[in-house]
Length: 213
Ligand code: BG6
Ligand code: MG
Image (tube, rainbow, N blue to C red; front, side, top):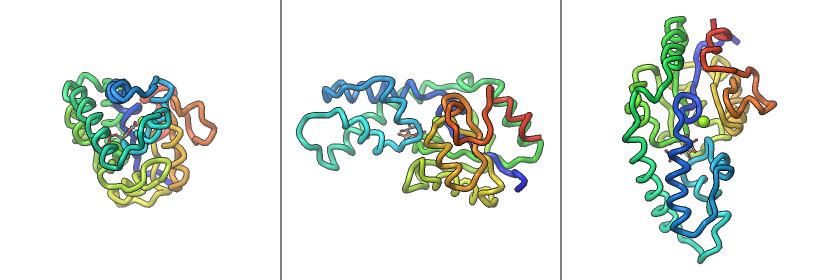
């Protein structure tokens, strides 16, 4: 099927907020005496906030936490995280990324965001990327996060395209699984290029222009 739409993951593809997630979770984990490192942080890619907390709590050995306590911990993490996001600026997006998105659009592709984050719109507005997209599907319009394909299927629906007409650009294994599960072309960048399930591997973001003419 001819590809007419391209759906982009946000964290690790367009912007690099991993370190902010790490610092915010680290602060919360330290407070609770939970061991947390960059390796565990890597497992949180593409995973929803509450599912991320469950992964972090694998190393928690204190008293059982209620659902409300977990909500409070996640809310505290989000407050720290948003204090980092508030400092993001347009300069945090590579010129190569910005110009590639513009050129893909000029070539007639419809562009969507497909992110598990509930902060996606805030991030896009901080870095001045909101208008680069025709549709935004994020953590606020889904009930299952990646590797479930829901966020990408919604993005395709928002673009008025069927899944087979869409490509997904992802840096996380969970995102590549979600794209394949959704019946889309899976384009890997960064970490995801070491996965064997993708259809296309990108060395750099602007390589998209070689594959989508
Ligand atoms: C994804 C990140 O984009 O968003 C995950 O890769 C994160 O690490 C998830 O947990 C949810 O983010 P937020 O902003 O809704 O807490
Ligand atoms: Mg990502």
